[in-house]
Image 1 (cartoon, rainbow, N blue to C red):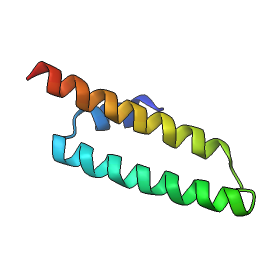
Image 2 (image 1 turned 135 degrees about the vertical axis):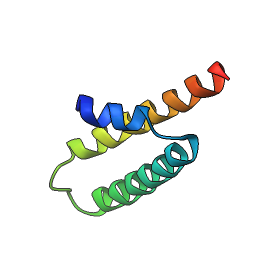
Image 3 (image 1 turned 90 degrees about the vertical axis):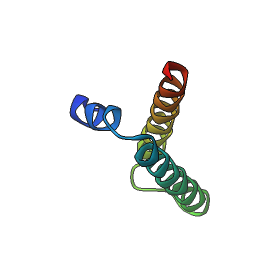
Image 4 (image 1 turned 120 degrees about the vertical axis):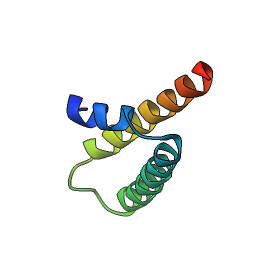
Length: 67
């Protein structure tokens, strides 16, 4: 993940993080479904989305822990 994108995510509010997480999970579901029926142009995109989901979940957990 580019550091600029990481800084943007890091500075998001909890509501924005939840919305971004939901968006990425939906995108991952659709991409995996499409990939099961026919090959996707860039299969590494699935990996990147999974990692971004994990990063956001980690950030949400850290914010909850610090409160």
